[in-house]
Image 1: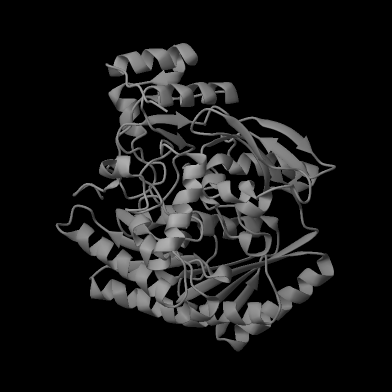
Image 2: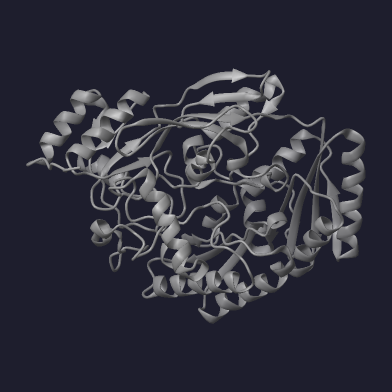
Length: 484
């Protein structure tokens, strides 16, 4: 297909405004600067015009205009991503789905809801809760992240230990391909015919097109819930408790660990009742039928004591439970009390390797003269080490990134993987070759090409050179001095 380029950027903006409306196409410097970044540490993006479609037809129109004028597109939700996946490279058209925020249909009989991609994660659950259901994936950013972004990154969350990540809760999607064609992936049947293109799309980080309607699975609210807070004299004891609980046959709804420094910051921030003298705390939650919940809570408490728990507390009511979870889910914000900036990774390691890897993470921090705090989804081994730093310190970013790279390599060396929920984006793109063979990466490139043969959808993300698209290699390299 021959690509035509506009002779002047204003002409492209004018065409986009005709396709949408003038107030939903922004091209001023301030707006483009805002959409050139996400919540990651990467700050080297460059946005072109920013569009705010309100329908599938408008997304198709934007995509076709971009194709006709030789411009790439970058889909974007709330911008809460932490791997640089929504960072525009090379001034592409940014397609914000935030105005596509309707819950279109709730089918309680079939336990399915059709939603637009801009629906905020927590808003969906708040709508469903009075009906006896909720949306199980619950990222820490669920108050602001969107379902479209969750789909793009196959997001997880504390309660995905028992219920699974986003892919397990998406049954079908309407997707606008990079050529403007609308396709339906997946289906409401238990076993849709053909290849699992739904599964291929979820986690594609915007490289396979733009989802405009998403059918999500509804999870019934549990009959009973018990939340436990266990305190330990070492992070290793907390990690070993997690492994022992899973080995006993119990699969809690959630198991979260925070070390002492982050616990102290959280307690000072939300006053949730966390023990600030503990080296680590384990927040464990079990749900289901009342009798089974009570038995499992007692077993977890006993296992914790066997592995060194110095105290075990059970939330006495919903209010106390909510405070404990508020503390966990605002942990990243609480870090501002300790340092002005942080770099967050999310590698995953086998549960049996948790204690050893955590020990090594602290050693890496000491080697680079950096403070590292840990808060993580312990049940599935999803680490979230926060490397704390002051960006005003000369040379600190080089040490931060060197330490982060070492953490990735340690995680992979014990059989771990690059990401549990944040995605690859720009951040881990150049580490992909440490985890995948040349043939593995080539097959991933071929899958992407099947959806986007011209490599116009979110170029420069996920796949490293030479598996990335040759015509955007100049865009996909991270310029010197833009991390910070």
